[in-house]
Image (cartoon, rainbow, N blue to C red; front, side, top):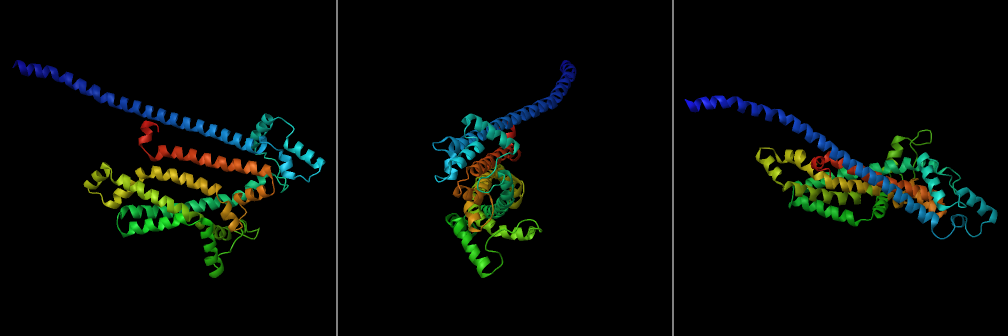
Amino acid sequence: MYVINVYVRQRPNLRHDSECSGASQPLSAVRSTTFARFIIGLFLLKRLATFVATLLAASLVIFAVLDILPGNAADVMLGESASVEARQALVAKLGLDRPPAARYVAWLKGLATGELGDSVSYSTPVAELIRERLAVSAPLALMAMLLTSAIALTLGLYAASHHNRLGDVGVMAASQIGIAIPNFWFAILLILLFAVRLQWFAAGGFPGWSVDDGGGPWPAFKALLLPALALAVVQAAILARITRSAVLDVMREDFVRTARAKGLSRRQVLWRHVLRNAFVPVLTVMGLQFANLLTGTVVIENVFSLPGLGRLVFQAIANRDLIVVRNVVMLLAASVIVINFIVDVLYVVIDPRLKVSGG
């Protein structure tokens, strides 16, 4: 009887303890969520600080290379046969009679406000030139990236799901060939096949996006399709191999075997669990490839006679137009830095582990 009474007297305390522990669970969850948000905010703040510092460092290097190194920019742009009056006028226009620090600060202000100066060889504002050429280069890089992603992800997943079988061997062989082919040589083959022999596409040129200029959305899309395909083949070959390796690494994890043991099919496990966990290294390469597609189109734009940023830089170097070269190179460098920053931010969205650890 004594034992029973003691048990009865102790039960309210046990209930009280359970209620207290149950009440503390939401509080701990709130604290955990707040801490996770703080870690994510700190992670993004660090990346933002790195982003700004990298932009400033890139601008300083570009300015130093083109403005401070031995030699006068006016002499380089005008040549040795230019008259003294023309040289003095260009020196005043470029501000070369001011200290380098003042010129650097003035250039940064121009970058912030969009006042990039006038091109010497085109007699046109540099900002207007860049806008016109971006209308070609940006859609070209985007189309090439979409083709790269569609081809590479499909082939990489297929090869990983058919590991050590005929499909895997075929994809790996095709990707090796794609890596070995120079994109300009593949571009020439595309021109010979689809423009010269089949006459489905034009061999070069860009009609423009506006119907008033003699072009339109569909003619402009057709003009960019072959260059985008030439750019995408090599990038897709690299990305397909990386996708295959990343998917195979994730498929060996314990949670994949657990998901299969619960009755999920191979396809369900692949799309629901494996792909998201394998996408972090794939996303890294995709970001680098998109930056490379945006900045590395010089050869392809010259093969297809496209009026893009790459061809603008090529012509500006040939014309010794350092104003255009400096601003376009800064734009391309900033594009690479911005894309890498966006990839860093997407890491937190894609990989749940980074939400806890903060990267």
